[in-house]
Length: 585
Image (tube, rainbow, N blue to C red; front, side, top):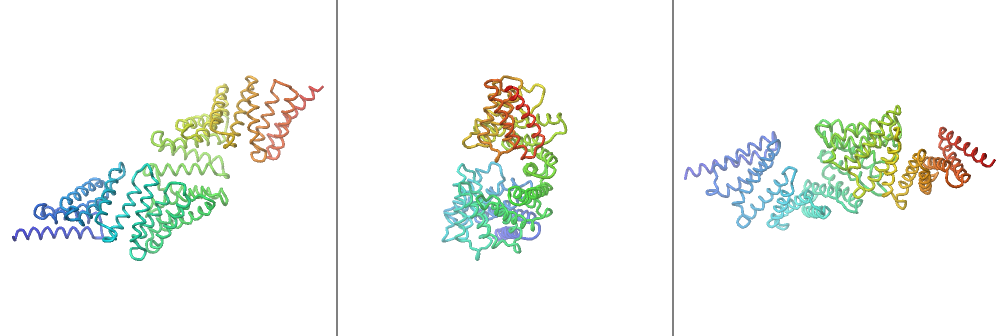
């Protein structure tokens, strides 16, 4: 009897010491948990399933909790597996029939452990967590155990948020119902932290909820973030306050509707507030994330001085890139470089050519991370933007110009490896149109095959661009197609001139001097040149049409203050008048 008492006293002491270590809130938490694990293991070497089943099962439960909470470092997966094994062992004793409360508590701990499992193929673990939590509700009812019931509802909401599903909307709606259920128990007065946590989680779900009611959902999201801030104040919980401000900034940034510009200004205020807490030294990832989001917001705004806003965006992205590096955070580094490149591309003023060169550097950096296999659409988007920049940048000489054209062609053709008329029709048509421009501008000795390829690209784009619902794109492409036909007609058949004329006249049914003055003038001028070269039909009639086109283009170029073009058209007018007067004589 004495020996029995001694081992039981020793086992109980180790168990109690394990609980004590596990609950210490000061010092090295991981070291404390390892001490707790050692104590529970010693207790289990004394308890046995046969002689002391309750104590044995309870110690297995506590050992599982300690293993689960010791998840830092390379041993994380191993410790989580041990946690699951210990908790499941305790269920040999704690059954729903004989020990319902202990059984329910173990089910709850199992659910939390499944939620801790690292990312990867988490689907099986999430379904197991879901099953465990739903099992808990057989014992923990709202009436008998309101606090436990609320905690289970809250964690059910977390599981539904993480659970992969083909019907994302329905799954997130279940999460909303669970979080709202927990708020039947949690109140701002009695359980402020739990109440604020549920409000914050509700806000996050509404912020990401898909569907047509985007504005309404984001407005609800902001209401819940503001509710959470009643508890998570700057003075009492600065980090939670900053996290909520950042999340609320994201909701404001994504707000559609007539008040979107006002919402963007609210987003800036939220991000700047968060930066009053986050620092590069203490919270580098949060700090970088806020700067990145702030840069995106400045990019989206439309009010105020555009150049100043975009310069602010550049500063923000550059700040984020002091934390996001190619080696440590490649995905974030690539995304931020992509936004930085797009910002340089959009800048209206300043050293335009230097900005375009910076954009090229950024886009080429992104392609170090984005690959055709792993990120096909993003890879294609970057290639499209890179091709677009190469078409815009001014070369130092004709050799560099042709080099840029060839790089643009390569980039656009790369994008078309991903874009298709069926799956991404607008992107496909836009890339075809720009590839056509690159082929049209190629000035190599034998231009004929390049012009033919340009024509094929423009005609491909017109399979998507329709006069009925994409007038501007349709008209621009018709004009470019006309330019390609007209250029080809210089050395080829008169048929091409007639096709060029037809394209220009189609484009000019949409383009006007008021809406697109430069394109209108260019197409009027080239239409005149095509009529002047047309050998078929009444030559006097063709030349009069050419003269009318030249005179229309001249007035437009004069109003645009383009002296070189004015001089060129004036020369063509003189030639046309001379031809007409000679024929009349």
